[in-house]
Length: 250
Image 1 (spheres, rainbow, N blue to C red):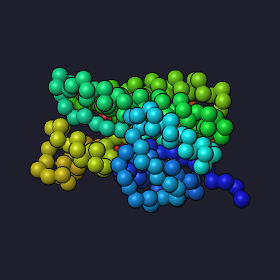
Image 2: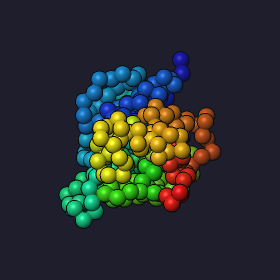
Image 3: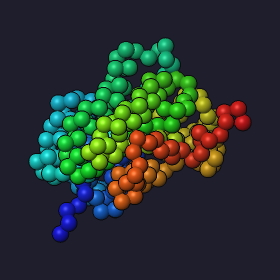
């Protein structure tokens, strides 16, 4: 019997992470999900509670996968935090904290997981954001991490390509998750309650709505699966309902 492909998904307890785990599981993959928050496992695989901002916990995570699963076909660097406040009010501790979660963890986890991914000629998917290419007020620290992730994605693709390991980034736009809900207080949409805010934001999109987490999960699966995207590496795939296609002056 052919062994299932194994994917490691960070931030699996969040909206996009949870949906992505379900998408991979339904496609026949075995999921190792990681998050610092507890969750009930609803996918085919196992859950590991760990804080990936701590390099020692990343080391333990990779050791566990090496021992128990013995392979890794795809790594999805999805875990992230967001700080929604003015640039000049962002503290040094906040800056360092978001860099550690959103960027340093991607570097160290990809570095430590690479020997396993190399063995399967697998793929690494970095979950960036449209804020890497077009951003808004009061979210500078988050945008900085996502922009840096794009540059790192290209650099990783160049170095890993000789081992047939593909590295791509996905740039989600507004997706109906708790992170979006928390960030809707930046004053960029009008409304008097959460659902009104979401609808108002959706109307700003070409598709007339915000995205669903499973739509991002399916795009991540495409980038992870060598039978679907085998000649694609070093790229940034935007999945934003057309938000960045429209001129801001329109």
